[in-house]
Amino acid sequence: MLELDAVTKRFGGLTAVGKVSFRATEGEILGIIGPNGAGKTTLFNVISGFYAPDEGRVLLDGRDVSKLPAHQICALGLCRTFQLVKPFGNLSVEDNVMIGALTRLPSVAAAREEARRMVALCRLEALAGAPARSLPIGLRKRLEVARALATKPRLLLLDEVMAGLNATELGEMVALIQRLHAEGLGLIIIEHIMAAMMRLAHRIVVLHHGEKIAEGPPESIARDPRVVDAYLGEEFVLADA
Amino acid sequence: MRPHALALAIFGISALTPLVIRDGFFLDSLILILMWGAISGAWNVAGGYAGQASLGHSAFFGIGAYSAALMATRWNASPWLGMLVGAVVATGAGLIIGYLSNRLKGPYFALATIAFSQVLLIVASRWRGFTAGSEGVPVPFRPGFWTLGFASKVTWVYLVLCLALAVYLVQVYLERSRIGYRLAGVREDEDAAEALGIPSRRLKVMAVAASAALTSVCGALWAQYVGFVDPFYVFSVDLSIRFALNAIIGGIGTAMGPFVGSILITSLETFLRASFSDVRGGLIGIYLIIYGCLLIVVVRFIPQGLVGWFGQRFRAMGLYARA
Image (cartoon, rainbow over all chains, first blue to last red):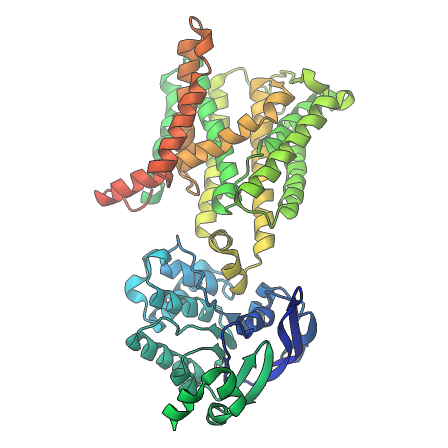
C-alpha cells in the first residue's frame, strides 16, 4: 500500500536520504534499521509529510502523496510517532488520545469513548487523568502509540518506541505490536533493539549514509556482510549463531 | 453547574448590582470591568486557547472603535452596522496577520502584532481626510437602541454584561468542542498535532481571526460608551498590554481568567486614579508600577493565574471540581 520511488532528501549539501525505494504491503511489519545518522527519521519525516522529497515520489495506495501536508496524510490512514516524544504536556493522557480520535470522529463524546479504548489497549488506564508531562519516558512512548492508534491508521510508523524501555515494558510493547498486527494493521518500525526487530519484522530495510544497502527477511539481513559491516558488527553474528 | 460556579457568581453579582447601587461612578467602574474583561476574553481566544499571544490586539480594538465611529459620523449609519463592518474588517485583518505570522511563535509573534497595531496607528493618525487624523473622532450621541445611545448607565451595564457572557460562552465552547480540543493540541505541540491529522496552520489563523472579530465588536461598543475615539489611545501598545495582562493575571487559557484579572486590574486602576487625582497628581502613574509588581508576582509564583490557583485550593478543599 505504501511505495517509495527513488526518494531523495537533501539538507544543503548533505544528502540525508538518497534514492531510497521500497514497498510496504497491506498488514506487513517492515523494519528499518541502520546506524545513527543513516537517515531513518528523515525518511519517516518524508513519508509522513513533514518534509517534501527533493526527488522521487511517495505513493500511498497508488496516489502520489509527496507534496501533501502531514495532516492530510494522516487523514489518508498513515500515522507516525516521534522518536523524541511530543506529548501535549499540559493535557491529560485521555485528552491527548482523544485529540487523535477527533480526527476521525466528529463528536467529542464518541472520541472520548474511543480514547478510553485506546488508553486501555495501551494499558494507561491508571494514568488516564494525569497530565501527560508527568509520565516517565516508557509511558510517554506508549502514549505516542495510543494517540496515533486513535486516528485509526491503516499504516502506522513507529520511530524507536522501544528505546529506553526496561525489560518488562519492552515485552509489553512487543506484545502490543503483535496484537495490532494480528488485527490487520500495517507497521513500519525504526528500531535499534535487534532482538525485538528479529521477532517482529517480516522484512527489514537497512539504511546507511542515507542509502538502502540491503532489504530482505530478518534472517538473511542478519548475515548480510554489508549490514554486519555497516551496522550490526561481528559480535552480533557470533552471538546469533 | 459546578464548572460555571465562578461565572455565575461574577456575572450574577454584576446583574444584581444596578438594582441596589445607582451611583454613577460605581456603575461606570462595573461597566469598565466587564468591558475590559470581555476584551481580554477575546484576546484569550488567540493568546490563551491557540497559544498565539498577541501584543497588538489594540489594532483590532481600534478597527472596531473607528468603524462604529466613522460609520456614524460620515454616513449617519447605525453603530450596530458599524460594529458589523468592524467585525468583518477585523476578521480580514486577523486572517492576514494570522497567515503572515503563522510560523512565528512566542515573542516573535508578539512583535509582529505590535508592528501591525503601530502601522494602523500611523494610518489612523495621518489619514486626515478619512479618520480626522490625530484629532480623533467624537462619536455623536443619538438616543435610542439602534443608535446605541443610552443615557442610563444601568442599560450599559446589561449591554456590556451580554457582551461579557457571549465572550465567556465562546471560551467555554473552546474548552469542550472538537475544534477547541484540536486547537489545544496545536497549542501544546504543533508537530504532534499535524501528525495526528490536525490542520494546525488553518486552525491558528482561524483562532486569530475569531479573536480579532470579537475584540473589534468590543471596540465598537467601547467607542459608543466613551463617546470619543483617539488614535493614540485605541491603537496603543499600552492597551494591548492591558488586554494580555488581565488574562495572564487572571489565568491564561481559562474562561473566567480574563474577568478575574479585569476585576483586579480595573478596580485597582480606578481606585488609584480616584485617590491620587486631586492632591498628588504626580502620583497617578504609580498604578503602572503596581501593575508591574503584580505581574512579576503572578508570573513568578502563580504562573497559571488566579483562577487556576484558587481552583487548585478549592479542589484541595473538595469544594468544587473545576474553576
